[in-house]
Image 1 (cartoon, rainbow, N blue to C red):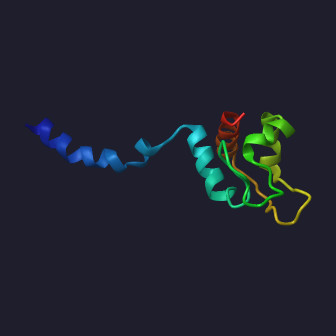
Image 2 (tube, rainbow, N blue to C red; image 1 turned 90 degrees about the horizontal axis):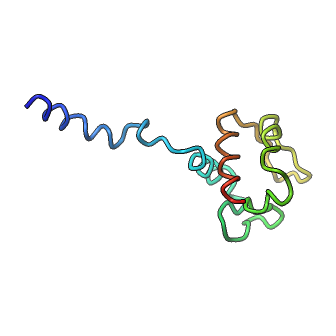
Image 3 (cartoon, rainbow, N blue to C red; image 1 turned 90 degrees about the vertical axis):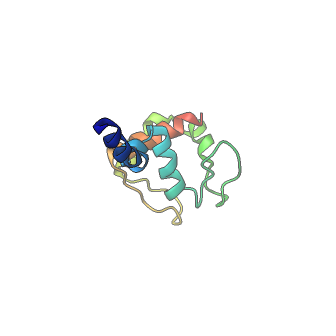
Length: 105
């Protein structure tokens, strides 16, 4: 009986606990891209970028080896146009975003 009561009390917590909501790096990378990049870039497998000069993420591997973007993301990407904000990502964010970009190749 105690076991049943304990399970009944803890089960609802498991539905909302952050550790159960943890996702794979690719999913976290997509979430990061959606929150920080989708305003200008197409971040999915189809569609045009909302800001025409911004390349779709699915084509980045045609311009750059994805693995080489890690250093730029750590130090801050600076582009030739002022509309692109400078980003500096934490190591886990870099891993997550690069993992997502690799899924688009």
